[in-house]
Image (cartoon, rainbow, N blue to C red; front, top):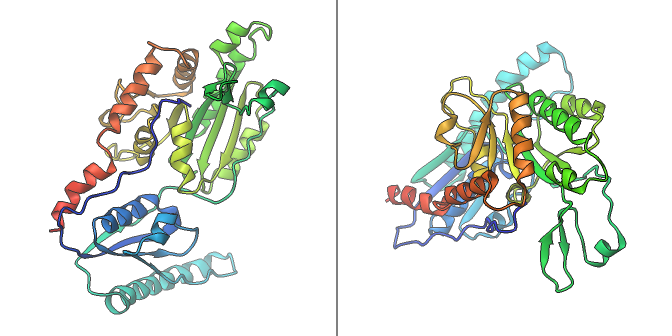
Length: 361
């Protein structure tokens, strides 16, 4: 975590005399799990447009969405899931579900909702969220002085009341995933095992050596079919200086955690070689440098100024070790990556969205 990072809250959009339009923001997924579609709705509402936010009911949307007088939430009714797990039942259920979805959506758009001027559509919500709390399986020594100074895992309060980073703090790494076969998390686990093997052989009494390779606190966020598989793999790992936790994050907590991380890790691979992972945009947008899996067009997003690319576990392990040695040190490569991530967010969501709002006139 870097105390110099700015907050991630948006500034809001000026209306600039635009004529109000009726706009539907449609996501075929859980509205609360779709932060970018919520951002679309908020930006349109701030510009004075009347927004119909359409999607499935599930997790709670952002408070700003619920409090906005210009946003109306419309839920698409979902067909109950069959209790039978047989393949025959699934083949019968799937087409019926599609037909019902189309009918319910058309009913909302053509009958229930007012006449629309525009529609913003997203077919898949990639961000995973939950209201559950993060539980860190960390065994961390905190002495009486730290408790008296309101110490935390990463920071400590000085006698004069100011906050500073702990000299013995771990390096915080965050990775986001949908836990599917598109992302091979064995690469990250292998890299962490390699790091732990080196860091664990340091002399426990040599504080300089331990500072060069600090402990790692690794948080993997997301929800998906392979989560349990990889959680079992993590449980089998015998790590001494690396601690791994998995969690879901609320839409409000997600940018705060990304902005608190020292580095983000992306294992996204592109079958087409043409799509760029939004999780990297999220990380850089929160001022966090990135280590990203290499594919053909990743250089359009991750550059030498804001991140590193790797092709296997060994390369990722070397990158983590190199950045860990430079943690909290000025005039280093890590410092340069921090500055590059800060420049990435100079053109923020609101600035870009102002261009799109001009197209609605």
